[in-house]
Length: 91
Image (cartoon, rainbow, N blue to C red; front, side, top):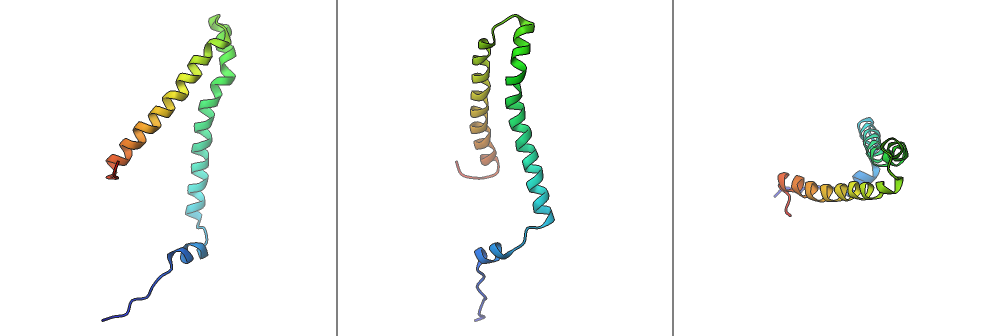
C-alpha cells in the first residue's frame, strides 16, 4: 500500500501570498458594495428636493424609506435562499 502525504491545508493557505487576481476581485467587490450602499443612501439627499417639487412634507418619505429597506430585506432573504436552492445547496 502506498503511503500518502498529508497536507495541512490551513498552513498552505496561511503561507500563500495574495495573487493579483485576488486583489482584483477584492477591488471589484469593494466597488460593488460601495455602489449598493450608494443607491440605498442617495435617496436621503434627493428626498427634500423631490418633496419640494411635489409639494409634500419630507416626513412623508419615512414610509417610502422604510418600505425600500423592508423590500431589500425580503428580497435578500428570498432570493438568497432561491440562489442556494438553484445551486443545489440544502435549505
